[in-house]
Amino acid sequence: MMHKFPARRSAALLAALILGLTGASLAPKPALALDSEGQELVVEPVVSGLDGPWGVGFLPDGTVLVTERRGRLLAIRDGQATPVAGLPKIAVAGQGGLLDILVPRDFAQSREILFTYAARYDGGSGTALAMGTLSDDLSTLKKVETLFRMTPAGSATRHFGSRIVEAPDGRIFLTIGDRGQSEMAQDLSVHNGKVLRLNRDGSVPADNPFVQTPDARPEIWSYGHRNPQGAALDGAGQLWINEHGARGGDEVNRIRPGANYGWPVIAYGQNYNGTDIGIGTEAPGMEQPVTYWDPSIAPSGMTFYQGDAIPGWQGDAFVGALKFDYIARLAGNPLQEVEQIKLPETARVRAVLSGPDGALWFLSEDDGTLYRLRPAT
Image (cartoon, rainbow, N blue to C red; front, side, top):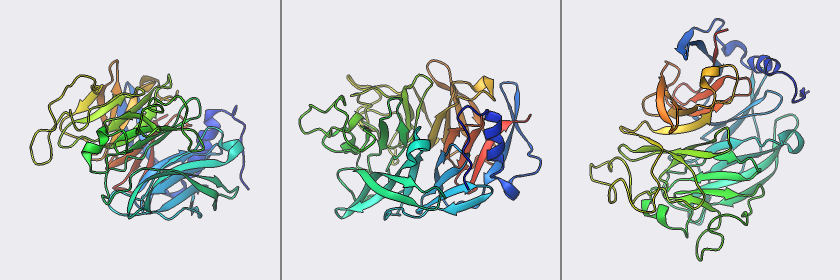
């Protein structure tokens, strides 16, 4: 039987419930991990043995949902990881597979979850967004419906993007990579290299910036992106993304509707063969990144810390690094990297989330483990 707790219950109760998920996989006495902003923090495993973990979602009762790229969705509760049946057919190849997951704010009433995956159609594959209703016993997704598929499908198996964010008004932001065809990021007639904005049912909001633009895809919110694998809202509800550059030039961007973020006309960094990208780093009508990394860190999941447990982090952004095995903390105005959280556990960090218990949760792809970073006391 699933126990439901009123929203007014304290964070401490929720934290205790989540701790109950870890069971024997949790170290009995987590070692001191680091000192950040004068506070001692420890890192502890929540669940291990994951195969290519990609996305994480929190249910109101403390259950944690984790996606594995090879096509498995897990519901983790009371120390047990249960596969959830009912997923659609998934194209698992290269960087494609089962990707991000979103638990909407109204889950307690609707029991709906949204997820992204690589779908096969029209002779290729592409990023798709689907929604399903999670059964009370967590065993099955029912009424699964694909709400959106990118156009066109392609033969490449990289740069799916694929982060999902729920806006304050309930609409959905979805990131799409250029699928290895960089010139398409500037083409408004395709979805490649774009951030999209959709209604919850997959339809197009009437106030999207290109709804009245001839031949443009009406779902487009911004364009000129390479491969956005991190996306998050700050405390004011502003959307931010991070995206992979080529050799150098990973970016953090503050997203504005209708804005062009330049790829591949402008970029920081070079092509993998050492040649220049586009015309340089600036051009009229194209946005500049708020910050960038050179050399590349291969950024992935992103979050803004909104908890109370670590006051020195309040409002800061956190970005997982797939390449150099750390979590970047960004602060200030403009946002800049101020700390590298580098631990044995931060091996190829795929996702980072500000958890409902005040901890910073992250997925280590190399370890196959979901961790939480929390105060030592």
